[in-house]
Length: 248
Image 1 (cartoon, rainbow, N blue to C red):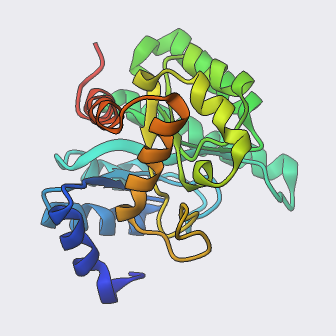
Image 2: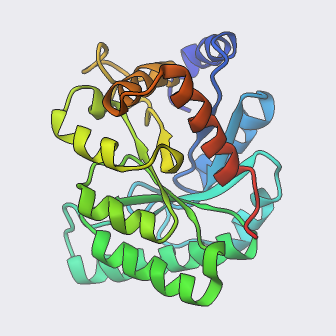
């Protein structure tokens, strides 16, 4: 696994700072490793799933993920979704991505888990698929749009189907994101680092760390003109509500 050299040191620092996190599976191998890691640390949870294009598998093999989903540390299915950036064979690749996304939505509903959504340059299709599934399963189709950097118009559609949106390091140095951070109700927001990518200020350009989530939360509080403590408490409640409560 990447970053073996200082992983324990980072996790210990997180514990000392009272920071927990959800690690994210992107394929079967990575999901197994993430579950093993979460089992070793009380402040870690994980998702399991198949990323639309950053993975080592061409298909979602539900039977293999069934072996992982019963673990109490597994709180969501994903990263799953659609990524239409830089497609070499657009028609075939979009079809493949939609297929594995559909399978993971069905898997999440079966196991009453939320979805961790990855969506890039594909919101029309992604939202259409989720809406069609909600017509069948209602709010059992729920989840979070990870690394949200889209405008208010897209955020509105995500909120309309009951999903949360998650903000990352770029909100600390890209002023255009302030509008959407202001727009999204605090009760529908998440904070994440997407470590090791997209480090916030003052670490921009360096390797990111889960410890840096504090800078993202601080910026959220500034943009929304709320106390840091208010934002911290609500983000924790949001996380428990989505990932540790079951759908009604």
